[in-house]
Length: 498
Image (cartoon, rainbow, N blue to C red; front, side, top):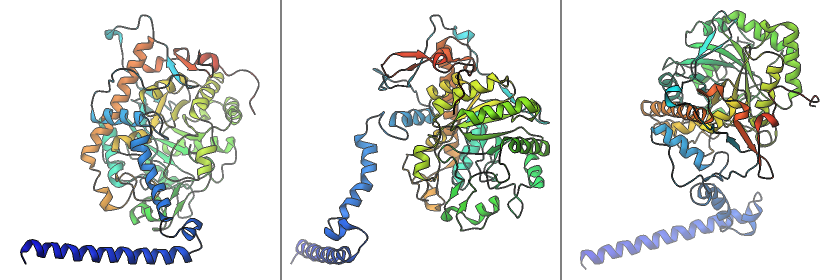
């Protein structure tokens, strides 16, 4: 028998052996499926019932890459993600033939182009803006677009390093998120906003209470420019941070001041702060201890509570006011949150921002309290709309995750992120190279700012913060459009909202 015959014999034996293994596996699965009591489909249809789970799992993948149109996916569609990808690479973001966006969807913003826009030599970049003029160390913020709160723990070490280096390159700030200040946030020496969550991670004593000593130590770091109290987050208002046990390494536990290997569950709100009076007292206390501007982040459920806050500030005096308020929309994202909170709780940023900025202006606090908009604002049109609606700054988390290479795999809570962004698996983290990704972070931020400036130029103003509500029209259910200042007047008026 020649070598060809021997090879065929070996292949035949291998085929029979593999076929036997397949039959044995099918028999074992048949017995398991028929005897288990957890899954009715598998019990009634042994072996073949397993394909349902397989196809359900793969369906998410196929919809994303093959079946969904450019503007159909949620939470972010392919057109949005592709814009970020091109900007992060420094590629041209011009497109051909026409828009794929359906301009008949109610609420769609349409910018009002000027008949005679400024000439190129009359076009200016946005000036820096001071936050906390009454603090001992006010912060002069250079950029209108910055990195929102994402903690080390929720994000991986290389992801935080890339964001830090990119923030410095682009001249923007980075918010630490509620997980405390890690060495990786400081690696690029960017401007840093230290977020104090409901568990006081990074600035707590051994009993979990806010520590003046640790506040002073953090404030002494020159890169730390502001402190942000997190009252609520868009994806989970009324629920504290959730970091699964598998993500709580020894290093993360040390930074946060918690036990390693145990799930990190923050309280659902700040203990000891039961009303606006106590919140303002706490803000004044932190500002006095640190000397830095202090504000808070929240999700709007109704404008009435914020009206009470502004009325209280008017009564107590502007010196006690927060230096900024970050408004997060109910459509905001996170690594892990209960679905009912993600889906059903909190006013969308498109409604909350114009209402709250109008309230601030009604009480004469426009120059005292800066408003930062957050919540699914990842493209130039989103940022320009937010500035028109009354924001002084815009921050994004998921936009910058896309710039790092996020593919919206929706695995943030499972420690299996395939791009290395939200996992602490060293094998998966190897795919994210900070020395390359930080450039994309910076290019994305610069790309956003450049195109927001282009929109400003088109509507007839010299720089983005001069965009006003009358420069935007919102599509109505009947297909017509109305100016945003007619729908959301610049000054709050009418009956009090319940």
